Length: 196
Image (cartoon, rainbow, N blue to C red; front, side, top):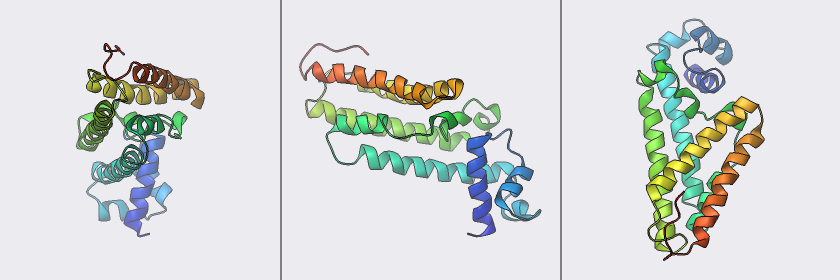
């Protein structure tokens, strides 16, 4: 890899480890092994470097979601695979854990975060609409609400896992969502709506 690639890779890791506001250029240089002037030779500054790194993370997470949600199996099987995906729960979401930082939300870094969550929500809702069309879930199921529940449960699961320092906390949260979705599937395509 080039020094520029080394700096981006180091930034991706540090954003996950310590976040944007706590990440210093000195840490990036130490993590990447790049020389003192490398960062400002390749990038205008910390925010410009972090933006490129975060855009790469966004692309990686989008690709992973696509592989699962557009893969084999029925729509609800794909949703279940997304919920049971192996995650480094106690490390937090590579994108979601940056949301509480004011320096992120009030900067150019907000764009890839918002874009990722919009993409993920649209993709999950698309799969739920397929499930509705195939009769896996009731015709009048509230797909937007269910989508938000799924995304919120995943992000909340990361927070609980970090709070308890226990990956099982996330599994418990997502198992709860899986139980609700199983009840929704059992309701059948033409039954009264199941509020979840």
